Image 1 (cartoon, rainbow, N blue to C red):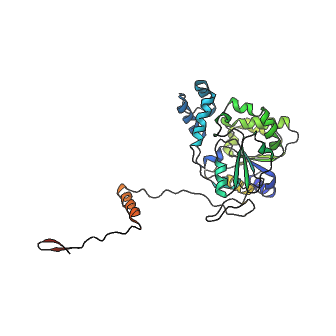
Image 2: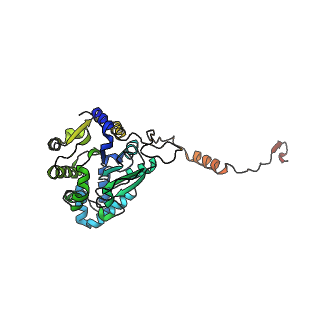
Image 3: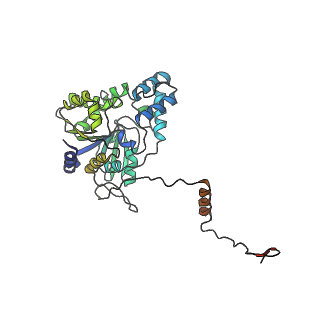
Length: 328
């Protein structure tokens, strides 16, 4: 299947497809990349490791040094400090007709996009009973499979914790029925060593669910070529279709796919709250740096801002004469 065929399919079947969001979707929103996260976690936990070590290895070393609870607390503090901004792709996904999205991310990127769009958003854990209830009108349920920073003890750490997720009672009772009974679209996954947990979830579905519905995984061509063994295993599952696209630093294809899934995407300036049924426009969110200002220019600008609207006293005129300066 080509990326264009996937877009056409989503336009037809968007009401029956749920998004499954990975960390790649929030990097464009301001979240750190995996290596940056690993470096900061190692620094906070006092772990000295060679550069380029994976997040899984850093987490294992940090757990051995300070304990699991301390690592979870550090991660929660780090994620809470992120100030993510809505992106076109996230804004589109939060308008998904089903009103529900799964994510393995700790952050609140989807929640911020939903609030920006004017949709009431509910953050849920896998064991919350609301995951079994239909979302309300103008509501988005975001199910965080790996926990939320507001509850540090809930964070599923990279490595052994993720391997145990699919085997847990909570996953089998609450999450797996939703994953098995829905068509899923995976966005923001690279399937590198730090994301092998998704392989475990897909294996569990293949082994324990009879006749699961179709799943779609959007990957760039570089990721597909770099992981031939994993790609071969995924194709053997039978219910997963891998859709590749040329690498693009602007992530245009990801945005196009997200827009096809939920085209009513963004609240225009000045509008009030709007529901998923209200057509809106999708506009790229760009931040362009202005020219660098000198210190003296900043002083002049600040002075002008301070005196705006303030009555000023007229200075006395001066007249130059032969005997000096006269005032009158």
